[in-house]
Amino acid sequence: MKKNLLLWSLLILSLTHNAAQNTTPQLAKGLTQVHDLFNASNKPGVSCYRIPAIVTATNGDLVVAIDERVPSCQDLRGSRDINIVIRRSTDRGENWSEIERIVDFPAGLSASDPSMIVDQVTGEIFLFYNFMDLDKEKDVYYLHVVKSTDHGKSWTKPEDITSQIAKPEWHKDFKFITSGRGIQTSTGKLLHCMVNLDHGLHLFGSDDHGKSWHLIDTPIKPGNESKVVELANGSWMINSRANGKKKRFVHVSSDRGKSWETRPEPELIDPGCNGSIVRYTSIKDGYRKNRLLFSNAKMKKGRQNMTVRISYDEGETWTEGKTIYPGSAAYSSMTVLDNGHIGLFFEKDYYTENLFVSFSLEWLTDGKDLFELPQVK
Image (cartoon, rainbow, N blue to C red; front, side):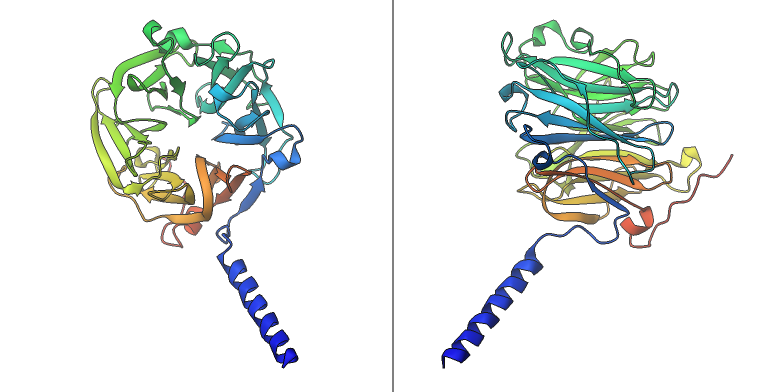
């Protein structure tokens, strides 16, 4: 009798163990590269790494940037020591450089929320972040930029551009440049998103390759952390986080930001989290199709289920997408590699890991769509 009870107990334990294993979230199979680039458990003295950003330099190198949050994992207003750190890859994500601090102020001065724009004309990379002096001006946000002329190997000293892109009366407002990335339009203009929670989402830009910056003074709502892309017809489209709405909102301007048409995106469900949208291919660049890519935590509630979707009609409709990771996942940032693969950099498992993964268009679409080089005109 005792022997039978023991056997039954072992069987139940085995079944319970197997069930637990089967419910543990797993990354999608077939990813080309998988690297945990920033993990605080491997870095003594760092509480966490948060807020990922990734771009592809004009020479094909990958550059990733992120917050290094030292005393705690709190955001800018609650931490006296946040640095901006980067890593680079010269082989499409197979190998990565060591972690390098490129913005490191003394304690009490913090930098947070990195984002980047690559100027395809000059080859320069602009890296933006939000700055705060927690001892002298707590809760007052300043907006900074640094620049690299050698594909991320070295960076200039910080430049304060607050007076160029924010109104004086906004001095004490909760304002910030949104993390992730901005764009360069087909006319060469550099374009990015800046949020003022009191006065609305705004765009800012540069027409002289980053020598100076200006505010596009048309407020847009609703719009928290947002990303902008240029549509095939030259219009600008902003995809916005909208807290409490359980979905994304889209704003489109056909007159360079003077006016906007706003619509909800019920297809793009969202728990109130930063996402990423990038241009993948354009017919006017010689490709067979127009394609946009969108990544986010595809849930109405709870930050999980990191998913990448495709639009073939300039954001009017979206595919159901492919789940990259079904478990805890939050902020994400995407880039297109020089071989046509897609790079995704995202926060995983309650901000403990920050993964870079890459995959082909064929993998993303289960063989229904293939990347082809653009036709030479």
